Image 1: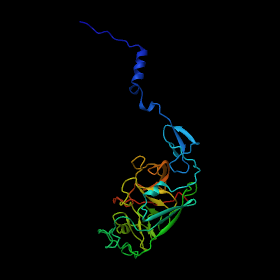
Image 2 (image 1 turned 90 degrees about the vertical axis):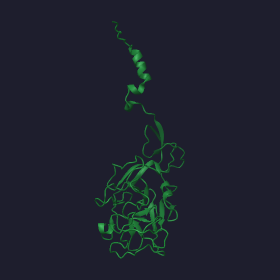
Image 3 (image 1 turned 135 degrees about the horizontal axis):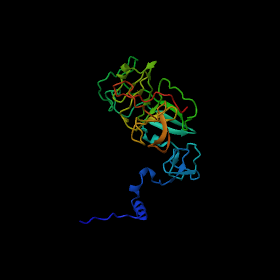
Image 4 (image 1 turned 60 degrees about the horizontal axis):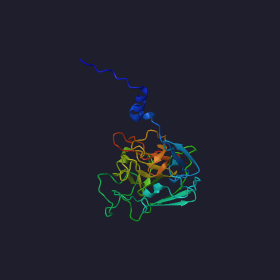
Length: 295
């Protein structure tokens, strides 16, 4: 009977084989990264300053791959990219010095029971659309003037103390209607009041202006979609983060964090709806409670 001899492979050959099959000899976490040069984007316009850069494997917050910005002083010189998602027929935005001047009609661009029955956007819903004993008009009146103008700092100051929200409109939604907080009149939004909300978490107030309290399913439902801009100059998004496709876990007490959005590859501070039911067991989520971080 013949036996095969043990074959001894020289160390140099083993090393060469390891180099040849590097991935199998070394953990992925130990692989060297390929560094990229990133350029500072101080004015958050998606264009980087060619004179201020750093090299890193992952994109640093506030930096982009582009290096064509010759005026990256931090002074806002154009409208934020997110404004392109607002309904231009219902929301106008101009840059006035260091401020955005945002004017909304208060009339949503989607279907709701709160439009009169002869309006093409009227739908029938099984809700009490007369509101919660606040003397609300039944419908958005055809001749009603619900326009509100917000003068908003285009470069929100995040260094000061947070400011509590108040009653009334807290910001403008992409639909042309308004964003409210967790209060309805003198009290916190109740389940009784919530019964007057339509399919997209909104109703009309005692002046007839249509506004959202809860997740606006007409344009954001368990996703990362843009909801609107708040009065402190900070944009607010749905319950998920576009950068991860999942619910963020690092939100501060205002529901905000700094990171990449679908409108700013350099990253910026922005709000998200909190992924916590406002009314337990109802799958209803509050848009924004506050406090404001951008004042």
